Image (cartoon, rainbow, N blue to C red; front, side, top):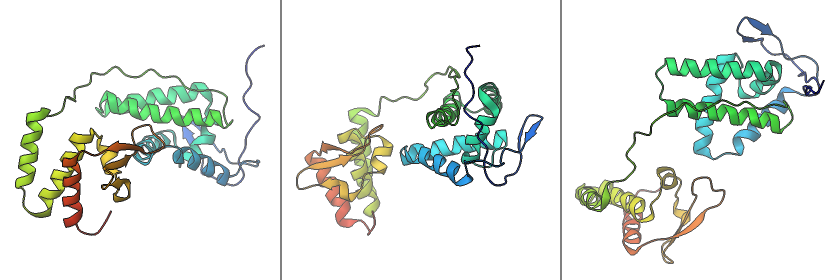
Length: 239
């Protein structure tokens, strides 16, 4: 009849609590070639393929959805997706999104949660657990943040204020501001910058940019080098 059939029935070895979805309850762990360890490995593979900062956001969103549909963990969710099928999974996502809206969560945050879950579902499709994907439109929202930055005069005022702060805190804050302003780094890029990423003698730093798998070399202006050296000379031991 032209319809695509679901992959060969997948049943898991071992025991597990029953999942609940609406009024439907079923035990999904029976005899099979797939074990719980297999599903745990698949879930770990998904999370290990994304950056640590994104990983935390995805893990939070996916675990909230697990709680919503009655799955004990992301690895259990993989098989539950197969059991639910495309239609019920889509309805569950809509209901989950509605619940987040009822909690007055911002549209941008809700979209991020749904995007993380969609990526997880698509991963289950890629590894052959399911043969479908979900499609759910993003909620419309207006960006309210002003991303223009403080401007040159504002940055000069911030540097002057940081320099007036006593002790090592002021030295650190000046170095942070110089790196932010002179290199145009994002917050996450600064957080992941380590001493081993710096070559102050050559005037370079290696930065892991957004959506990058490898660090890229950037040039350090003299003022930035001086600020970083001041911080490294006075800071306590640590990363």
